[in-house]
Image (cartoon, rainbow over all chains, first blue to last red; front, side, top):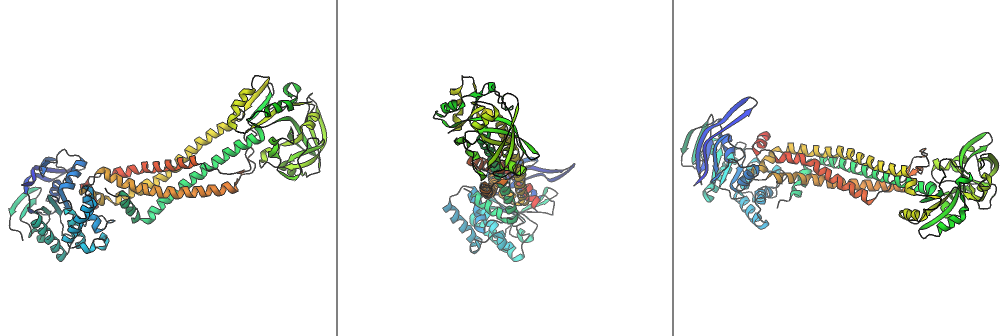
Length: 230
Length: 405
């Protein structure tokens, strides 16, 4: 089943009189349960592609269909609705809300989805346990290491049981050990829950976990290969 | 449901000093405006009360041709047999006191100094004359006193007069001549209104009538009501004779006008002070939005809608406003209460008898003014926070996330 379907997607950024074609006619599908890496040098368009899949941005032309829903023409709130029910994000920087505890950060998407207190508590505790952060549930981000913060971010991304998790350079700011731990957690979740993961990365540690590697160069797909991930 | 106030409270706690100063600005603005409102109210109440008590009364009954500014004692302009008229008016249920008064213009001379004064002949027994009974020395004049005079404290001080001292009083008489007679200072009074006390002297009515040649006549019947709102009804009942009957509203048109103007001034002052204050609040929230661009991007990315982001920032503004305005209101009330007790000394402001003010103004804080101010400050603060809140809600998540990196 297709979770993502891109058809001839182009994204042009215009800064002053200068136009930059970040993506140029990209078409691809991502199937449910895939663990996909988008790779390529800086400026190849992988982050732009991730943002379009995540409905954080809209294409200049072409079609983006997420979980069967065409995203063109959706307003800001409709895109927010689509994101909160369907997509989870893990960012390169440790994107937690600094005033909230680890528990509250994971709880936030559930609050936005209108879950009741009992449902929230159970889900948050399960997720924090899943990423090995149950002991640090009451800590705020500034009391956690980078690796710990990223694990909480993974738990938050999974909170609403989304079909798709998008991760932009999730290990870029982590040391080897923490990077491996985060990737192990995500791979396990992928295998246990069948959640689809898409990474934008040029970290070989991430690529080795991927079951599919899509290589981008100058805004086009240069290579799309499936392999047996670790 | 998201507890916006919990989030807002924590967000405000990130920069405690900045939050404190913003709330302080709002508190100072509120306190200042509350005190100004109390001061204006106290000033206007004092002016109205003092002017009514000392000068206009609630009603005046005069001959139809009498001119208040000329102080003429010509018989044509006076009320004949005024005690009888006053008694008839006093018999009305709504009337607290009705007393005849005779006004004449005169000059007080002591040694080589002369001062122009208004001579007022009064019935010393009438309760309407209670405002003059506060004496700094001597005693109040009596009905049958034939050479005693009551003078104000500032006049006594300027002429170096004390109780028992002699002065010469000149008067413009009914037949257009000038008469003069020595008087003995019987007492020195103070009403707390220098502008009034320095320009008036009191004689018993009978003596003033005899001295000025007014016969058994008076310039007016001065009337005080139990409730001043009933003045119109009583005035209507007294109309239809040869007399002019004027109410305190008609007699104090200038004061009513000044009162309206003061309300307008107060609105402008409110606007200016609140404008400055809420700019501080808006600036604080704007800084907060700019600092939290990444966070807003993250919240948006995980599905927070625009109106929820607006709610988050409005919750912060609400907490700031609640804290600032509550402290400000408390401070404003405390300052007003303190000065309501001790007064604010202004001395002789040199105002005319159309608007008499006591030398001390006592602020008077009304519940209406307080509630209006608190509600206005609150609404204006929330309105001012709408701009940063909407700015935050309209950030595209991708741009917010990019800016932060």
